[in-house]
Image 1 (cartoon, rainbow, N blue to C red):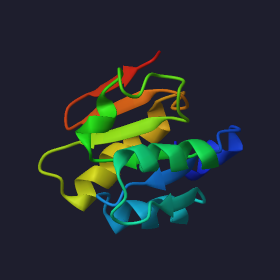
Image 2 (image 1 turned 120 degrees about the horizontal axis):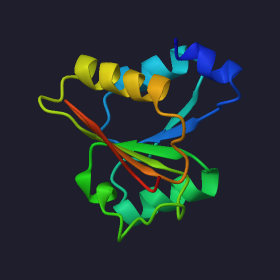
Image 3 (image 1 turned 180 degrees about the vertical axis):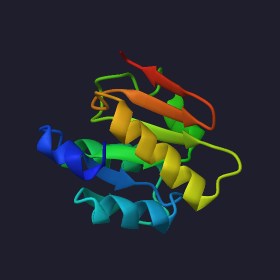
Image 4 (image 1 turned 90 degrees about the horizontal axis):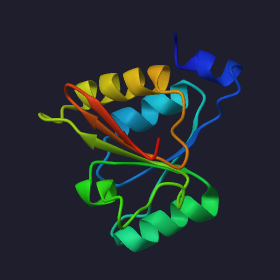
Length: 124
């Protein structure tokens, strides 16, 4: 399935990219028709998650602090995707994110951790 076909299935994810996410991801998501914003540079994690909540955007980040389900319990936010891929080459990050967007049925309200070899979903 192509990312663009997700829109046709009624899936209309909107994303907030943390400042540590490469522009490759931003460009890829925009090309596929998704609404994408970057967080303002230099803000703390608390402000990042508040922006995501206020704007109802799924956060995409490489900051492993956002994988903490005690600090960010499922359903207390619109969704968090943590990219834990090493080496973190932009092309590889984009490929793994594409795989998740094409194959994971629900991202909202969950913490989705993407590794090189697996996906962990907290809040299923």
